[in-house]
Image (tube, rainbow, N blue to C red):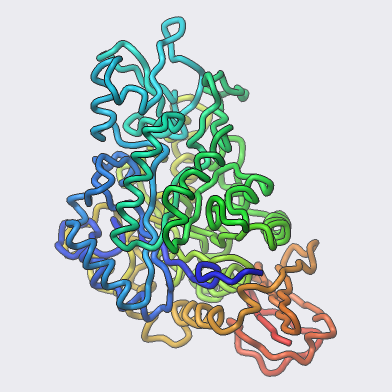
Length: 554
């Protein structure tokens, strides 16, 4: 298997609005990130993925960009950005930027021009259509509820927005759009950044003619079917030729709805498109009738089956991204494990072990290394996320979910649950800001914070440090092949990693019960590489403590 620096790296995602506030306005900023670079160095991560910091009216927390080559005023200046980049590079940390080019803000100069008249040179940068029978041009739904079309009276036509109405979709079929995007990407690469995480990149190619989508029972609008469109690979290969291949970059595409076969194209080992993709199969296992708005739990057997499929079927053909949480997902500990105080620390370590020992590049979402949990919101007034607010209005308005249940689902599955401020210490507002935070701070910050964990050698933080350093030392963790054991166990996730003569056995107890396990003969005399519980020696038959994780090396 070809060795690459981005295969051996561990990535840390910063959600800048909630990471660290330097000026007391309650909003995280670039100077705040600069002040915490030594923390990242101490943790040992190799790469920072920075969620958008571009100029934006902030309808969707920065994923609606009005200027790709300017910094959002709330976050600071381009000089602050340059200092941050330099500070990262001085500490041996690379920077991956969030690239959002499926859509822009409706305040971007391209769209301002585009909407001004039907014959404007920028008109074809976006999708404009006449209405049909006094309604929208087709039946497509927006990912943020309602129709994917908005009427604009300036020219008496509709424009397409697969997300918020303030996020019009770019028309990638227009070569001028592609060239302008590539030019902007080259500008950032010349600045010295180290890669791109590409937001909803699997949606950039729409079906010709924009035909009606498939309607599902009880829904007002249809699935637009804009995933893995007809020209997506052609456009990404052009991007690779025009930009990516010219620099030593790490690239990862957010590819909702991606299949194994499609992933092999996006992240092919031949390097024609991207290095890796984010697939979402494992984080959609707990969806219900109304998508993510449910209290279903992930079934362990299904989780093992899904993770193992991606591990084995991509091996040697494409590269995996390893994640349980990010800024769009609830806290991984609350979702996949147990955040009860008596189990929180062991369970956070177990989940980290399970993920970081797999083949692929691991992603740590800010606070995950502390074992942060979902934040409870007491009322809708405390919720900031446009997706949650729109879904609450739509689903309770239709009478299909009660307000009490919807609030419970938002606390379990809403995006704000993981967007609350980073918990730095036990002082007011968790040390995040001297002012009033833009979103509430999780009340458990006095028990869970970086200062306390850095001082405690048994903390989740120090366990993550050890996992990261092991990946640098043990090539079997990076490049070894994966094999699932005990597929039918409803308690244990067990797998092996093998590279030449080196072999690892990874055992994770996903329950609060003591669970017996009989080790394969070859591992009985092995050594414990890492574990979250103290053990005296290894027998062939072991009893695993609640949420115990154990990695044995032969």
